[in-house]
Length: 131
Image 1 (tube, rainbow, N blue to C red):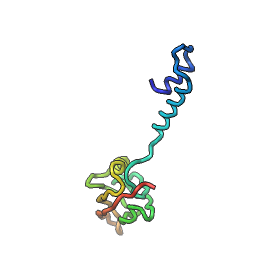
Image 2 (cartoon, rainbow, N blue to C red):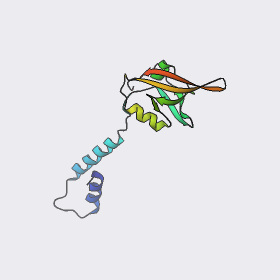
Image 3 (tube, rainbow, N blue to C red):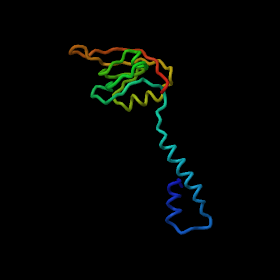
Image 4 (cartoon, rainbow, N blue to C red):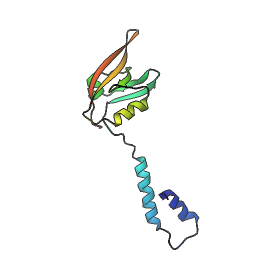
């Protein structure tokens, strides 16, 4: 039985002699909540803000000094491949990033608009540690 169910049972059922002490239930509940709340992304860091685009993942902002900036990724680029894997959605890119440690070298393919044409560019970057 999870901690939340134990807490509900404690308050909404008649007391029993073998009932777990309330302080143990509350501690378990908070441990469970904090574990679920720890959604800190793992893996390497690019230093970009992105949004979904029909062609892939569009770079909305590039943070100066981080991996993406050093590799030459620009605002408006559309990421279509990372590490030889196609990228169609932000979730795919995040999943890829979560499995790459800081210091990992990745080839990133972007679509970049030059004049009125889109061109593919291959860029090599080294992932940073998360700030």
